[in-house]
Length: 156
Image (tube, rainbow, N blue to C red; front, side, top):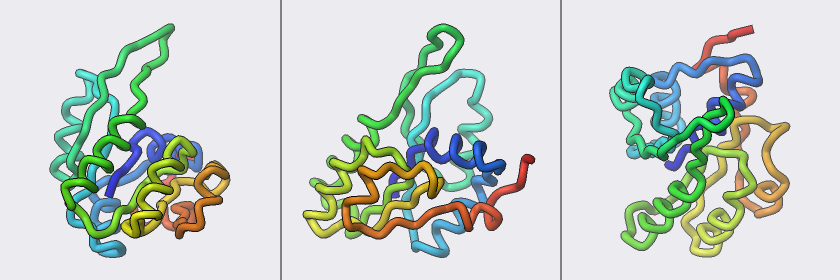
């Protein structure tokens, strides 16, 4: 499983939830039998304790260097996520691939995996923000909107 950490975090936050990552990891394991869950996330020195917590929860973290530009943190992990999926595909590291994101930038990798018969499903963090570029790929999409209560707390 490959998780776009920012896409997941932002969608949950906008829907009024704070994810309990330990519960989320448990839910992924129970529902999808996930053994390895890669979480792609921007690296910030002041978040070391949070990264350690995520690792204790069972996530394999893959970091992207960040920078602050005009007061906004920049660190998009899309390329790293796609590269890892492709690398693992050619190493035969998985039989089925799940992607947690609603970002249309991943439509090319979804197509590639679907065409190679190894794509299981998209797990989109928000029904209303899942890109049309993912929706038109003729693959299963699970929307987390009705699942957040299982592994999150309300912040509204």
